[in-house]
Every structure is written in C-alpha cells, then in structure tokens.
Image (cartoon, rainbow over all chains, first blue to last red):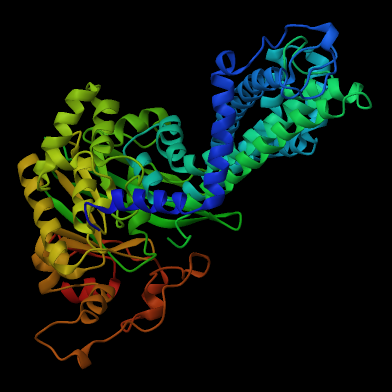
Length: 285
Length: 326
C-alpha cells in the first residue's frame, strides 16, 4: 500500500472507461440527448406548439427537416423539446426511486429478522407487477399529470433498488467496520446511512443508470397510451402516438421519435454496462 | 477511586439449536486504572465473548447476559437500554479489533472517522473535531498527521491502520480499552511498536486495558495480571510474575508447555491432547477433565476458584492443584 494507491485506482477506472468504445458511444448518445434537453429553446428551429394547419402532416422538407404533425407543428422541434420531458421525468423518477428504494433496502438488510421478512415480502409482491401495468394502474388512479407520471414511475422503480440495496447491505454488515461502528457507540441510523450506504453507492449508481433507460421507456409508453403529460406538452411517446393515428398518411411521424427513444435507450444501457465494468475491481485493467 | 471496570458473576448464554447454553460462566474481575489485565485461552474459550458482553454488543436473539453485573467507570451498564449503552460505548469504554485491515470504513477518510466519534459523543464542531483528530494521530505516532487526515484506510499499512484504530478508540478518553488480539494480524516488529504505544498511552491516560490474546509472550511483557479461560470458565488468575513462575491449573501448565521457547529444543513442545468439547457436550464439573492428566473423582463436581494459601491473589479452579499448594 502506498500513498499513490487512490489516484492509481482512479486512473484504472478512467483507463478502463476510456478504453471501452461501447461506453464512449453510450456517453456520446446520452450527451446529445442532454444537450438537446438543456438547450431546447435555442436548438429548436420552431416553437414546438406553433400550429400551421395548412402544412399539416407534411413530409421532410427544407423548412421542416422531419416534417410536421396533424396540427402542422414542427416534428424536429417537438422531439428536441420532448427530450426535456423525457429526461426530466426519467431523472427525477429514478432519483426518487433510488433514494426511497435504497433507504428501505438498507434498513431491511441491516436489521434482518422480521423487519426484513416484511419488507422483502412486500417488495416481492410489488416486483411481481410488470412496470407498465403498475404505471398504468397508478396513473389511472392518480389521474394524468406530469407530477403523477413521475410519482408512478418512481414507485415502479423502488422495488428494484430495495432488492439491490438489501443484498449489498447483507454482505456489508458482516464487515468488521460495522462492528467497529457499534463499538464506538454509533446509532443504527448513523451506522446504516453514514457507513453502510456509502459503501454500496457504486452498485446503486450502476443500477440507476440502467433504470434511467427503463424510466424513460415507461414514460414514453404511458404517453403513447395517453396517460403521460397532458397535451399540448411535447413528449416522445405522444409524438409516436400522433404518428400512429396518422400512420397511413405520415408514417415517418412515428418513426423519428421512435429513433430518438431507441438511441437514448441504447446510450443509457451502454453507459450502465460500461460503468459496471469500469467499477468492477475484478475486471482486467 | 473506583475501578475502571468491574465485572461480577458475568454469565453469557448463546442460543444453539433453540437451546440457551452458558458459553461464559460466572466471570468476575476488577480492572484498575492504568492496569493491564490479560485474558488468555485458546479459540472458543469465551474470551472474546466476555469482551462483547462487557461492551453490550451481544447479537440480539443469539446471545444474552443471563447473570451478573458490569460496572464501567462507576456506572452499571448491565441492564441498560441500547440507547443508553450507545452513550457509554466509544465514550467510557473503547475497543480495538484484531483486523486493522477491515475494521476501518474503506470509503471514508481516517480523519473523518476519528472526528466522527468526537462529534457524536462530545458534541465538538467539525473543525474542532478535525483538529483533535490531528492531535490524536500525532499521539499514536502517525507521521505527517496533518497531511494524512484526508487519506483513506487503504493508503495505510497494517500497523498504521491499527494506530488509527487506537486513535479512534481513545478519542473520547475512555477509562477502559478492550483490545481483542490487537497485534495478531501484524508483523512481529510492528506488534512491538503497537504494544509499546498502548503501554505509554495507558500510563499517560490511566487507561485500564483488557488485553485479549493467545500470545503468552505478549502477556509476560505487557500485562500486570492474567486470567486464563477454558471452556467459558476462568480457570486461573493471578499476577503475571507468579503465574509464569508457578502456573497452578493443569490447563495453564499445558498452555505454557505448548509454547516454543528459544532456550529449549522445539522437540520438547507438548501439544494438549484432545479438543475443547463443544458447548453441547461440555462435561459436568471441571470442564478440562476430559483432557487433564491429573484427573480424579472429585473433578466430576465443578471446582470453585480457590485462592492459594501462600498467595491469596493467585486463584485456581482445580481441586488437585489447590490441594497441592496448601
């Protein structure tokens, strides 16, 4: 052990990360999406809600690169603005899912016994619902709004994080430093959240990057079936639906936002896999 | 001045296959300030369990204190609720563990880990605690303490980590320090440094140290008194000098005979025949009888811990050798 071990470890992480072309492609795809979301007002050539009924359902042209929808709104502008909604919903819902899921999972794994049995049992029940079904039920009950959409997606994300946090905590609580915490008179709360939680953070981050893709997909699906953010908000799922209703007249209207969804999915999955490999100490450097 | 730690009739039970069995029976001792009491015995004899019981760290549902009193620095802690125990642990009593490699949290800086307990128990501000952490690291002789506050445990060697552990344990100036095999995982040269450090801290701070070890060499050079445990019983206790000069219990004699010495050929090493019986089939009466060369009929009843006539501070739990002493 030397004083240079930590920078060395960090370099190993970056070395592995930058040498992985898959991860780099993922980062680029996600970065494009983030830039689109952040700079939508400057990037979008038109106001996404501006209607031009004469030009409705037009194909790609020099004025409208990706054509227009049934109200004559510019599809490219709506996809760029839609990135905002997708990423916002995805990030917030995943973050909420991680925070709540990790807290519950750490408590479950740390205490064990009946606490663990109750939490794990309830969690398994929640997990047995497919995310889409769960999302549909929740939005149907709560009513469609952006907030309820986020809430519903966050709730569907919670069980996965409970499970991973619980598993990691079970392994972590056998470590000597947890006994040392108790010998120092730290409360269970302090031991769990100041000592165990930071040790399982890397696994949660990897899982979160993969869940971000799922959350964005769920958002698109719910918007597609009309349970997403209410119109006229531009969402990718909403544009696909718009195109789906006019599939014979303007098939490309569905295709373009679908490609956007696909690329973000691929990007986030590549990032998640790459992060997992880069943080895995057993991986060859 | 009251004893740093006083333990009376401590009995710890473990639940094994649904049955509570006494794993530590009727242990009593007093630890004065500035004194080192060594607790020796082979693995599974109950020495670590005794320490865990004193700390109040028995796992709920698996272990319990079934009888006895524990008084730490004048405060009775046996029977205290967990929330009160948390205030005592790390404050009046500290503990250092065998494995310095794994006893520190790998993702937190050592400075933070030392400061944390000061913030918890003493209500210091972050800045005060950090300053105190630096002083503590200097006290345990970590070079360049100020720069190393922000280092992570993996950047330290084993001996340095054990120093950090010691700094952690003594941060709140406890009266009692339990050292559970503090040097077993370290190189011999580092062992001596760590023990030397413990000794000087003890003299300066009037710390009572309960030193758990199976290394009799460590006992001879570092402790004033020694307690030998076998199968959950204290079988012999006395001053270190008297103990090494004239061990009374057959188990203590066997332990000393099993220890290699430079002045004797290693062929003379004599292992103790047999194994420690499991808790479930521990014999009635003297627990060492199944392996004892001096066994006789009287051993079927549990022998009392008897003081020797010529040295009342030297006690043995053996009817045969107690008689021989008189």
